[in-house]
Amino acid sequence: MKSYNIIYKDEKTFQKFVKKYKLKEEKALLVQVLSGITEEEFCLSLAQFIKKELPYANIIGTTTAGGIANAVMYDKEVVLSLSLFKKSTVASKLYSFEDDFNVAMMQKALVRENTKAMIIFSDGFKSNAEALIENIHRTMPDIVIAGGRAGDEFFQKTFVFDEKNYSDNGCVIATLSGEELHAKSDYILAWTPIGKEMIVTKAQETVLYELDGIPVLDIYKRYLGKHILEKIPEACAPFPLLLKKGDITVARDPIAVTQEGFLQYAGRFEVGDVVRFGFADIEDLTDHLDELYGALSRHCAETIFIYSCVARKALLGEKLEDELGVLEAIAPTGGFFTFGEFFQSSEMAELLNVTTTALFLSESDYTECEKKSFAPKHTFDSIKKSLTHLVKMTSQELETLTIHDPLTALYNRQEYIRIVTKKIKSAKRYGEVFGMMMIDIDFFKLVNDNYGHDVGDHVLKKIAQILLKNVREDDFVARWGGEEFIIVKNAKVEALEKVAQKIQKKMLQESFAPVPKVTLSFGLTLYCEGDDEDALFKRVDNALYRAKENGRNQYIIG
Image (tube, rainbow, N blue to C red; front, top):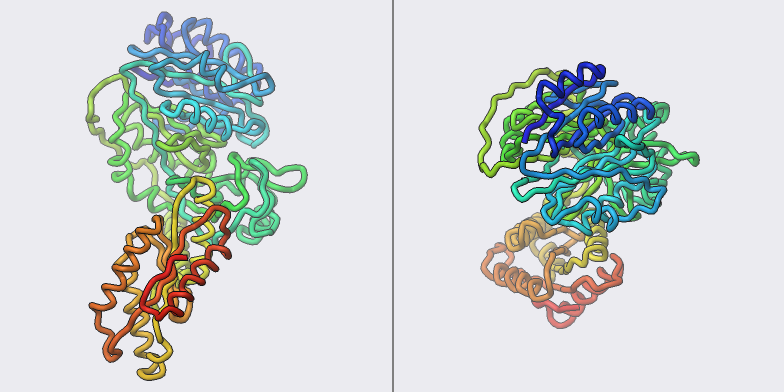
């Protein structure tokens, strides 16, 4: 396969381009019309002209917040990305969500048994693009999804189109099918969470009303300054809200202010989601391009389609071309800046923000890419870079102080409550199984009374290390307070018992001199459907109480 990019100037220039590369009679040709001009009549007229010159082409078009061609960014221009397939077929169609659209209908029209990839452009404001890609992924989980939401320069007007029509509440889809077609997707974020975690307390689909019970605009005013309200949503772009969905960190940027004074985002929120503000990790984005190339070059490709967020462009400016250059060093690139990027992992399809997503395509069976050279073209403001480093390090230090117990260095009670709340939410949503144990040091008051608080502190710190060394890395260990500890573990009750037995055995082997002997009592329980944090804690606390009442140095399952 081959890809060509051209910045559209006029009909005559395009005709010469078609003639030069002998494209007119090509049967498997995908043309992406990526228009920085947001006039419906112009876009339709251009698509119709392209169809006349390339009668077999499948045309998908979108308005953009900027185009990308061969690692160069363009504003207010029309980028035409033409991809010629030798061993694959292309199918495309425009859909309006105001009509009776359904996934089964689209699947019948565009999908074949050997369909490997699906490129979707949707409007930037009206449609529920997140639900669209989730439904498609649920129906066709093996097809790689890429693309993004239409954009524009001023957050005012977006639409998608083909050579027949356009829609500001719809999508245009192209499918790529072929036995020898290889399709992979990846994404780059490098945005770092900062500040405290906040819980979504009121939201409906893509509209966010409250965080921690506070109106969302008041949250932005508090943390980003009252001046931010003068240019919402564009001024918020460099500071998305970050949340975890499965193994993916998802960023959410506002795209509009509702009439009621709340914020609409490119993707949806759910009550209970835990979010933090994010800021660009400029060190990762600028100082580790070699590592980035090493990670991405495992996806061998003959062409790469890039769909990158306008917020990334707004913050990084021309420096973003270095990131795009890493991809260009792997294969020729073309794409556009979006109001939300479509990405599919092995488990889910997500609408992302503030990312650069890439679809890697090849019709060859080679397993290694020829390494090409690339070099950064732009320097980054050293003051901004230093400020970013200062913010990142300060945030990390404050976070450590906030969530850890100062004596034992274990997590504290506040962090336990946050973690167990997330665990319960995940168990309800995904059916995950987890349990917890509460641990009490037997007769710890006598240690302090007989040997002094310094020895008592030594015992606490030593037990904390024993707990950490006898659980898995992904288990959560916290000091509840005083002489009590809590472990939260993704496990069934048998695994909890084994951990308790292992810790008991280790306690017998350790010396706590001058204290002759130290033992522990345990309460164990599993999360049960319908539990909230209070119910779960009450059950494990009661189990611990019974272990102490029954003579201590034992565990009881509650």
